[in-house]
Image (cartoon, rainbow, N blue to C red; front, side, top):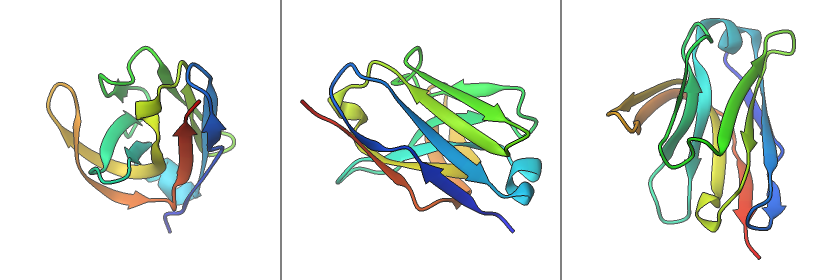
Length: 125
């Protein structure tokens, strides 16, 4: 059974850092590439970053490249999203997701097999 539980969201000022965590079930961690999506109010869900299924390759949206880092801990069956130099446009609900489908050189989200309940990130002064 696939379960994904996010935590770590909050309200921060522009330029601050925040780390999101995602606790995954064993099935999810073993069998799927895990990553992060986000959805801002009134906007479509957006690709942020993902691991390949093997966990050895990472891919980022151009909008977060150089500021966000995705990482994983196999012992804890968890993935993380370290977000630095946050901007107001990063404000969104962030979802941990499995089996993310995307297209294009700057990856555009198309679908995901599973996702968690989301955690709110608000960047505001």
